[in-house]
Length: 499
Image 1 (tube, rainbow, N blue to C red):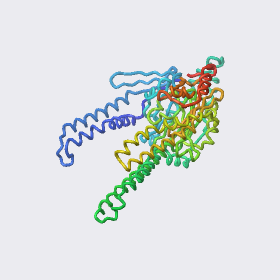
Image 2: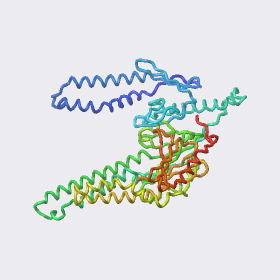
Image 3: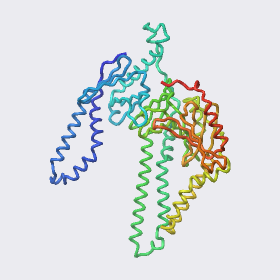
Image 4: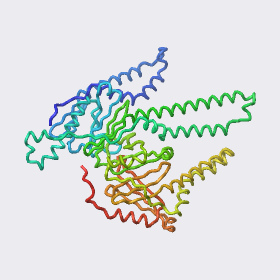
């Protein structure tokens, strides 16, 4: 398969210029402010003209960079050549390409363009993708994806197929069949936006503000005619703060809806494909053999409503950078439906509900672990801000209740080659992990735990952000030893091959 060298769409030069302009926005604003009032004519034009010259150079460099950037498929490689002064060549073998991720921003959608990020096994963590095609036509992106798929298929078939050389055999390669396994309704997206962590913080802020406001409000003086102006000021401030919080809450809801609109999950051969977004449409491809584990999360608002979210722990892909450090497979779903959907995507994983829990004597340790800092901090706060500072004791009590919940929710389960660990901080987390994916297994025991025959454990998985750590504290010592023994008997033959 061979392509003629192709260039990116000319809008790439504009996109690169806008990115550079965004990075230089703060210095430019400072220069404009320090050089007087531009409208009155009292401006030192020399620094300003230098800045304008620099921006024109950046724009010109972007155009030249676009002219010198080409890509093509040749001899089983994706070949990219670029460079403003020095000509650089990057050849990526097809075998190394794990996936192509598409995204459509506000510059792309009107022109039917996409940005293509080329992911390989080496592009992990916060590093950039192996290569990026800033803006190409969607048809060309589909052709590139198809060409890579066909090339991989040919390489897989060729060694064992004697009839490969015939033209008929080469044209009989089946097209990939993409199956939709999950899609979020708009009702679910709106509910997710309302109950998201960000919205919860805003609601908490409003509640805390009003509780403090009512305590601090000098009710006895409100009716005092001398202090009428204070009353008016307080009301104005309270109303303004409330409006700001409500606006922030509304913005967080709208941003969540725009980000997760049209959320769908597909299975395409050995790849998992997630598409989402309204203003900026994204398509992320995750090879199934790079998934290291699954995490189910239930926050304090969604748990009583019976909702949970499912996050994939993946070994890499720069798609996991920025806001994608947590790759949400199911952003919000009824907990009762998690098993049905997960079976379609990852049939090897089982959602279990039966857990071995910590012993009763661990309860005090859980409460102490969560609340000691809160009660300790309440002492100076109560003294220096007496009597209102005594309210900080309530926060300590809340943390103690959180410790009780953490004890109640903690647990573990081993089902054949799967370890399931459940714990809670503020959010209840359940990790589903296969034995052959576990990178390290830690057993911890302090002097005080040893006296009570207790111990804690931590399990580490590889993830795009470096590592993901699951933990469970104050278990029976015999339980942690049982898990260690299960982990030591490692059946390497069960590990699926990784490319």
